Every structure is written in C-alpha cells, then in structure tokens.
Amino acid sequence: MENVLKPRCTSGSSVTRMEDGWRLEIPAGGRDTYRLAQLDDYVVLSRRSFHHAPPWTISLQAKVSAPDLPGTWGFGLWNDPFGFSLGFGRTEGRLPVLPNAAWFFHASPPNWLSFRDGIPARGFFAGSINSPHIPSLLLAPALLALPLLVIRPVSRLLRKLAARVVRQDAVEILVDVTQYHEYSVSWLREKCIFHIDGKPMLETPVSPHPPLGLVFWIDNQFATWDPKGRLAYGTLDNHASILDIKSIEIDH
Image (cartoon, rainbow, N blue to C red; front, side):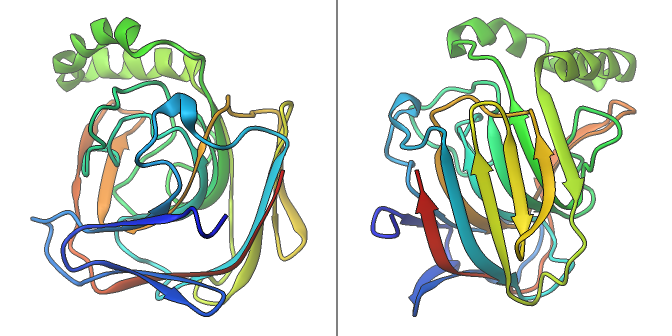
C-alpha cells in the first residue's frame, strides 16, 4: 500500500520518505498563503474508483512537532467531498458531494468542524461521518443558498438541517501527540472502532459509505460553521510544522 501513496505539496512544503515511514512538513509563514503536505492514494482517481471499502483496518504510528499546531492535521479515510481541502488546493474535475470519513483529526482554533452539539468540533479527536450518496448535480441547487449563510438566523437553520442529513460521532483524544503512539481505525459496514496504543477510544455505529481514499496531511487552514451560525474559512500564521508517520499496516 505504501507504494501506492503519492505526495501532494504546496510550494516550500515536503513529503519525505524515511526509514519505515514518511515525514510531512510545511514551512513557517503568514496567513496569506495556504501550505499543505499530503500523502494519499486517490488524487488522480474519480470518487467511484477510490480503493477502500469495509471491512478495512489501518494501524500506524504517528507524532507531530508541537501539540498546538495551527491549522489541521490527521490521517484516515474520506471521500474528498469538496474536491478541495476545505477551501484550498482544488482537485480538478471532482465536484462537491456530502462528506464520508473515518479518521484521527486535529483542528486548531478557530476551526469548528461539527454540525452536531455534544461532540468535539476542534482539538484532537477520533471520529466518523456518514452522509447519503446524493449526486453532485442534485446538490447544485444548494449552492444557491450559500449567500444566505451571511444571515445568522438562516445560517443557524441550515446548520441544523445539515446535522439531520450528515451523521457524525467523535470523541476527544488526550495524548501527548509529540510522542509516537500507535493509532488504529477499523471500518466495518455497521460500525467504526478507534484504538490508541491498543486501548479502545471510540466504537460508533456511524460508519461512512464506501468507497473512500486514504489520506495523511498537515496544513495551515481553518473552517468554521459554529452553533451561532458563524461561517468562515481561511489560512493561519504557522511555524514550521511536521507530521511523522511510520509502521503503516492495512488489513482488508
């Protein structure tokens, strides 16, 4: 599987092959530029050609260079729903769809990445997302409502509607992310199970629809749609940031 993984980087960022793993690194910089280092197995594929379906399990070891890195980083499975990385680095020829994912995810403030109250929306969490398969062309009329999101009451209402369509579950993870830990995601048709160092973190019936692509990434972006209806996305000032991954094993 590691031979299938391909790097994708913005200028100045890097993905470096190391013994038994990879180093993903973005340089320090201001909020005027998007910075991404990514390793994935889907960027040149259509969504229906993504490789992975349940039953499927990944285990790996990972660490980052600081506990409070600005932006987002993580690893796991998703369907690249937006055709771009939450607003940046668009994948040509791929129209938006609703999200499906199972992953470990870190999101710094001001990110707010949950439609549902009571689950983590930022910080480090394990989580999954299940959305119905709705063709991109049928979602197109929803794009007409985007200008209405600047109206807070309308934005709050649309967010509540999104929470009814997009199922989510997640749990906060409290480990020292600057030290190597063993992470695993088991994706079954009826549930997802997340472990760290062999200890169960989350078992949830929220299981994403296949097929999905495998991704490891680190970047300096944020996206916010919070319970008050505030909607924003952009990039953040960041210092040099590193995600190291090794000992990747996949069972399916």
